[in-house]
Length: 210
Image (cartoon, rainbow, N blue to C red; front, side):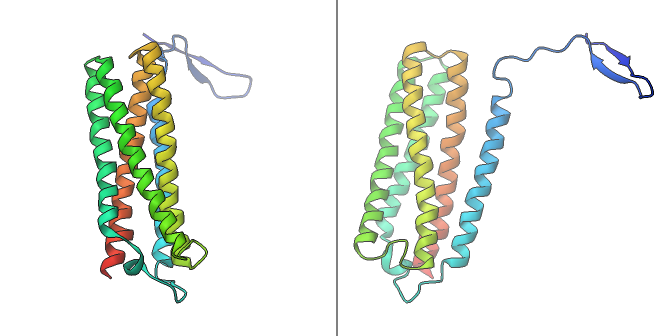
């Protein structure tokens, strides 16, 4: 049991400290730190959504969402990302059951869905730029490319992180450190899903309907 002892310098009030500090397990603060990171990422995307809300109607005489967005293609892209979230969930279930081969398999499927999402997004970007609707065309397109592109960069970094974790799990197995890293990536990946649902609804659906 921890005890405290008062100490005081001359002319100062007594201060208390623990003689027997409680143990701090390795990685005990990792999850808290990662939650703080996700909150900071929320602020970044909140600012990008706000910027799109302000500039979304500034077309500068150019094409708008209804003319530019291919909603069926975006729906397929959304499906790819949502399926990747489901398969990552299966990977975490296999992690809890200590089935390493199943974890690696589901992570591989997750990576394939993530790559499909990025491929479709890059196709969309290249098509828009080919049609003369690049980010320099109007404030609306600048805000669109910034918001969607930032999300795409996050997915790219997530895939790189996933590849690194696959190598670590193959080499070291489902040790406590790797499980903790898989949990952090799980939070990150599901966070990207939530952000994309906002993008799909706010940017694409409402853009086409209004």
